[in-house]
Image (cartoon, rainbow over all chains, first blue to last red; front, side):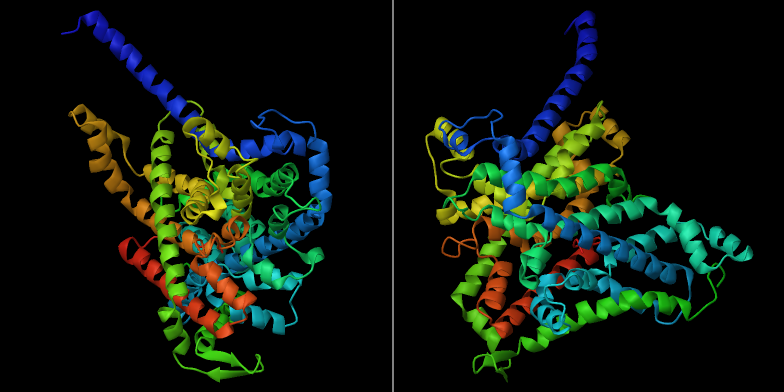
Amino acid sequence: MAGKKKMLDWYFWRPRLSTLSTHLVLFLAALFIASPIIFAVIKSTQSTAQISTYPPQFGIGSSMAENYKVAWQRYNLGRLMVNTFGVAISVMVGKTILSLLAALALVYFDFRFKGLIFIFILVTLMMPVPVRIVPLFKFVSSLGWGNTFWALTVPFLASATGTFLFRQHFMSIPTSLVDAARVDGVGPMRFLWQILLPMSMNTVGAMAVIEFVYLWNQYLWPLIIISSNKNQMIQMGVKQLTVSGPEGMVHWGISMAGVVITMLPPLIMFILLQEQFMRGFALTEEK
Amino acid sequence: MESKFPSRRLPLLILLPTLLVCGMFLYYPLAQSFSWSLLRAAFMGLRTLYVGTQNYVRLFTSSAYLHSMWISIVFAAGVVLLGLSISLGIALVANRKVRGARIYRTALIWPYALSPAVAGTIWLFLFNPTAGVVNFVLERTVGISPDWVTSRNLAILLVVTAAVWKNLGYNIVFFLAGLQNVPGQVIEAARIDGASAWRCFWKVTLPLLSPTAFFLLIMNMIYAFFGVFGLVDVLTKGGPANATNILIYNLYRDAFQHNKWGMASAQSVILFVMVVGFTLLQFRTTGRKVHYGG
């Protein structure tokens, strides 16, 4: 049997050791997850000569400014990013408004076929673009929207996820609130903008993150519906990064610079709004 | 009913925009996928012929399509098994109460915001036989330097690892949320009663976490089937020799490179049936929410 002193020591050290190992594991896991991006950032600063030396160099290289400038100009990233911002912001705002209105109708009104209408909206969750891609392409083209902003925005304005999240949130708000509003003569629209909306900011934040990330990263739909580079979305710029350049080979320094530039906007958005994202989206089940 | 606004027209009016978009851009094209799957273009695409179920028969007797389906299943299995086990392991550690837990959480989940195409581009570079880093490490440690994109099995491994890495953040977010429903006192009590940490995990944590795990299982399947088009397009373009030609890539090629609208529509319908299957499974077992990123 161990002596009393040793026992005390063990109980002193044990939690500290376990905390230390937790820190170590978490640090290594974070490093493991970040390592591809760390390499991308390092390589985005190196010249062709530095990248093609063997063994590979893992220090900051000498042509950072050059690589980022060439990536920005050669792949027209500024234009593509402005286009994508326009589409992402429009769809985000449109979706938020449409889902707020739909949830308002579903929670604070009584009308016929309410349950059916909710199911009608919810079922669209099972219709990602690939299951309707050929007819959608033909239909949107027949509207004359091929290669336009409208093709990238209007078909995406309805949101089952948004309607569901807002409906869920509204139902958790005490009914005494709407009774008080009615007694005071507050109409439904004012009730929505002045009372419900300020109480729903976590859900609005979660929606903003989900939608911005989704729209910024959209690939297949712009690939087929947008035909000119000046109207194109940013992921088609990413697609070009690994196509051989004028030198007849991929210049990895420039490609990685392009990758770093194009991944920043959704990343910043996600990091800024991650609390709202966690609370409004991942934790909606919590009582 | 109290607690409701009285109007009967206003709710329909404010639902109208959502219903219109759903009807025009979701239900209508989906219905057309069904009807077009029974057609075939003829006379250089000038006319269409009604061919009944012939497109489906041709798909299910085509070894290329069956191969594509097999590859998709292998790919999805890889994404689910690797992705869920790694992210569960990380989430279990990240759930411990230590200083800076929130900073660690951010550092673990941020790849959620990356695009599949970005993941593909970085992977193409990392696994490049001459300029990449992975082959350098492999050569120094085990003395091999494989060419990833030209070997059939390695190309699948390449796409799976990129897809898993990109989705780790999403999985960790939901595992962390699920772990908040596992009461710490229960684990503590079990540990004091002499249960090993391993036994606690299997008997207490995992059962309480199973709704989350099941939700993520379905979401990862859907991600593997629908969410990785950009990844495949950048990394392998379905090659080498169709080794990474998953269903969605095959559909894209038939629809927009070979202009086989009927065959492509039939493939859309098959994919839709699969989504419905996944979703029903999801609702029947847990009744939890579903999100496809749209």
